[in-house]
Image 1 (cartoon, rainbow, N blue to C red):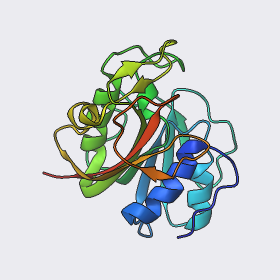
Image 2 (cartoon, helix red, strand yellow):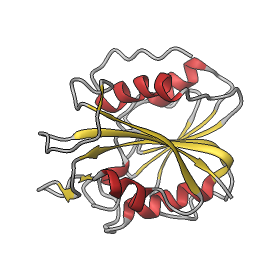
Image 3 (cartoon, rainbow, N blue to C red):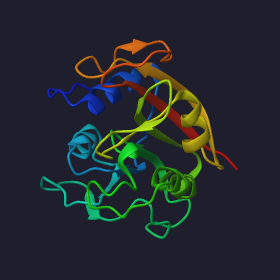
Image 4 (cartoon, helix red, strand yellow):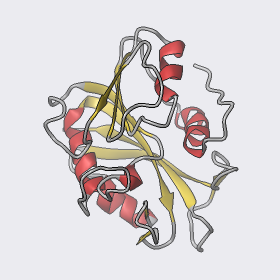
Amino acid sequence: MTWAYDQLDPALMLFTAAVERFRMSFPPYSKILELGCAESDWLDRMHRADSTFDLVGVDARPHLRDAVGYTVMVGDAMNPELFPPAHYDRIVLLGALEHFGLGFYGDPVREDGDTQTMQNVATWLRLDGFVYFDVPCQPTYRMAENRHFRMYSPADIQNRLIVNGLQEITRAYSLPEPWAGTWSHEPTVERVPYWFCAVLAQKVE
């Protein structure tokens, strides 16, 4: 599968690089969920890559483009009843998880909304399915001044986002935009605006 994005969306740039680095696979006929899909054309590209994919996107806001070859819905990723257990082979969050539960995009306010979302992800994934996500990263955890998003320390990613039922497979740190996907060392000093961390985790019993 070839990934080449013409826009400078850092989450898409990071995903492009992570597909190769993590050797991510998306077998034909996979059931794939994107959480936080409103601004991205990732679902369009996935459908063009393989029309056998069963693709669903969820966002707190309406989708910004026509959905051709996939389904989109307005919904709350923090709602555990959104999908039945063991429903998806792959779940992807591109530049999204750090926003959930902060209310900036009209979603319900919940301080642990990111953790709750990952608990739902662990429930919705089939055994051995995987989740890919990226988050802003700093040496210590903090919230953006406008409460727009969270920035996670390396330890917080494990403690806050790798919930029961998930096992981290690998992670990698990257420079931020416009160099997203340029791999770097684990953050030990502050960076403006932040570093990125890309994570791949698997559903386990």
